[in-house]
Image (cartoon, rainbow over all chains, first blue to last red; front, side, top):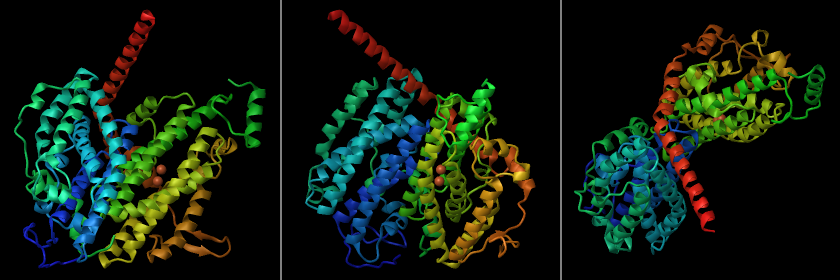
Length: 272
Length: 321
Ligand SMILES: [Fe+2]
Ligand SMILES: [Fe+2]
């Protein structure tokens, strides 16, 4: 627990809440971004636990949720070390406010039906696969180690979600239509993944983020084609929602955090 | 129908501790009792996910969230092993699930109580998984082979759950005043329902005698309940908390704890579907199943297409050859 009034942090994070977590540089912000992405998607997927369409898949989505939660914890842990000043994985996850979260908009979108959850995972896992694929060679050793370990997990997420996209896209008329609707809902959040913000500059992350977009698009398109879901429109300029990475979120995030952070907020300083 | 001789041989096998396997001849009633018990156990694992899943999104730390997610996932795995074990007796999982949804099949009444605070998650791990372990350890030597083997795997995980639950309570018991109160309150609410998990008194249990003779059950309800009380009465001291039973007292003569009377009226009402969450739990299961229909249908349709495709492909390949 901490009540931080650090002075040495640059102005990369604005004092928005009463409890401001010091973000002293772009690298910590980038770590928080990685952690927030994984945590939010873990939190969303975990809503399925006990409610999945079939027992085996209830287990599978919970597994993915656990993998993502593990990734989030690793990144928070490292970010907390760099931040110092009493920060822990829990202060970072539980005591930052809506405007301080740096996850992309895609991962905070509601689960919707199983098709929408699958598609969200699919779009994100393909991105994460390429991202961790680069980060495993980072000269920041802890980041490289976390990414390399996570890459094995994400490889499975990519396979699992791609198989489901194909199964549902090319399954029944109903499942096909539901998948088209899911694409309509979520495609608009994919652009943000590849538009670098201040803490994603090449000098900080070690590679050029936009360079991932083309390989991502090719992988995703290939699966969507096999799923009979592809349309040439996907290649065209679609207006993309952005802002999450800079703390401008959808209305959903406030509710997610209200639940996620409830106990830490209600009983400040308690150990659990 | 088994002849008199085969019935005798069957009982002899049981008496000699030889496991009954799926293809072995067995009395119809033995098969039915096992189907009922194993599927009821499977349903309990699945419905049991709900009260605990209720706290996943609100778990108070990332570590607790990970532990809880993994625990609830384990319970899903238990359900899976058990449905598979029941299927070896010639019933399909769909049929069992239909019976659950129609109310024909039962599940453990304990899951019809609500999880109101975070401490309930600890209390469930400690008491509910604790009671389940006693039941299940006794069942690891049950006479039906596939059930016994499933239980061995399950028991390992359950004891892990119990330790984690106890640990969560231990942290609360050493925490702030509010946390201590939360801990005691959860114990108060979960204690009696946990005792009810062992079922009616031996004198009133309809299935006990035959089940014991067939070694489907190895210990009676009252025996198991007594071991549970003995265990919990000691462990609660480590927490510095109390069990909500004024009659709880060590009996030097019997070397057991005496304990008070269960509210049997409540017990039977919850069994009959009138517990605080019976409707809610069943509705949640049905909703998940119904909303998953299109997913299961799509998966089947896709698999079917692939099969046809492979068949035509093979045929084509043969023709070319
Ligand atoms: Fe279990
Ligand atoms: Fe358990």
